[in-house]
Length: 210
Image (cartoon, rainbow, N blue to C red; front, side, top):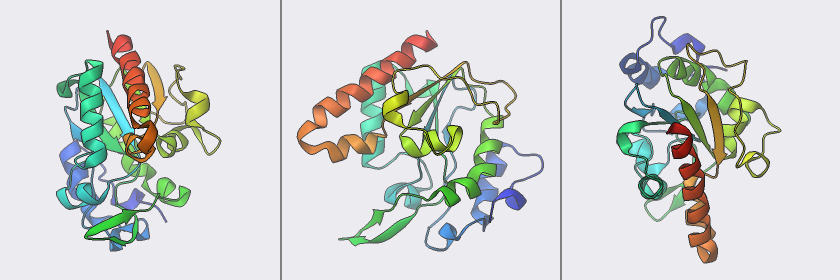
């Protein structure tokens, strides 16, 4: 299981977006509408790395266009980070879901096997980018880069070094971890506090960008 054979030998971001539609590196493609690669300026200063596409992202073919994406857009604006400075992507490129709630498919977190299978896509994508910093949105993104022992609560607020086993042309100067914006939506009674904490983390990223 793994996506390596579907990754183009001479990748560009447009080629990756086309090639991921043919990926059979794990079973997730069977129930997904399409593969979803990242979006944004390839010269962006900041990469935001999330978990996987959601229901609306799977249908639109773009990352972070659903409810969590709207939370993220608001938080970036409140942190003073313009959309032109950001490239957004996920560690897993197909939507994993189980069952329905009304007309909406219910998100199911990807397993580590799915993250591992998708690694060739993420590695190829990251080699196309030159960000100064990377923000990890949630535990799945953190585990994808730093291994299964990674915990957002322990890493949050600390600058991390880019992992040596993820070769890129120009390693990012720093990595920061924060919660996934979907955690804000799940917070309910403490939603404002969760949102404020997300904005605070993104403000730290904005300060590091300068």
